[in-house]
Image 1 (spheres, rainbow, N blue to C red):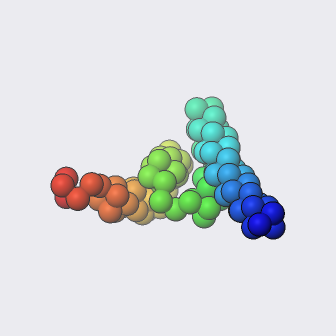
Image 2 (image 1 turned 45 degrees about the vertical axis):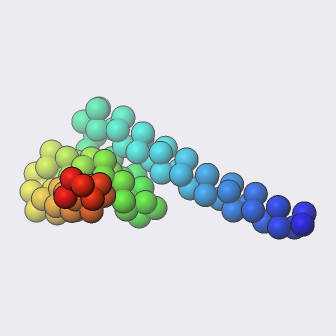
Length: 95
């Protein structure tokens, strides 16, 4: 019983640390974007997306970085992903 509880606690801690890492990466990128350090914001956003690709705001921020840097095609790709995820995540009654 104790081993099961310990294993469960470890799973919870692992999930929590992953979530906190994603949040931290998003916050770091947001600060860099506010400082107009768009190129520096891209790697943390890419890592956050790799960890949790379903977060709409991450794609929106990455698209904004690419747009600010003049990378129109990459920006459009991220905005298209964000739009597709938004439709996918919308409640059934609003589709």
